[in-house]
Image (cartoon, rainbow, N blue to C red; front, side, top):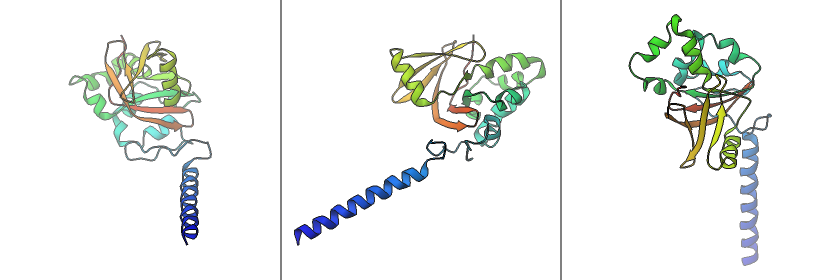
Length: 194
């Protein structure tokens, strides 16, 4: 009697484990990545480019408006690949009052483009690769941005932190949003170059 009960219990456990494993396998895309997280309430498709996905995020309307004003839509729709640290609307709202409106003016297009490209790194750098770079760098990794500036990546409490050239900090709140031309990591602050 005991042997039969144990056998049933073992079979049930094995069955549940394999069901969980197959459910996990189904979560993976054909690209081999786990299912993309939603951003701003919208599905982010790994077959769409950075701009095609960003326009669907309710949390990134300011960023999209800024990218359009800076004339960077074509660049960020290009083949890349790019790693974009994408500030949310709340991140832009943290800037001093009137800053965003001023930056969106046509006469400030170059300054806006510099700030936005400061959030972009050439190549696809996943969170795992970023953490590996931080470990290899003894606790920090220096990232060269498309604007030519530097971001310093560190980890704190299991989260990736970015420090800009002015000493401002941003936390990666959603990592590894895979795109057809790179990856987006959502950040909670706007990073500013010198």
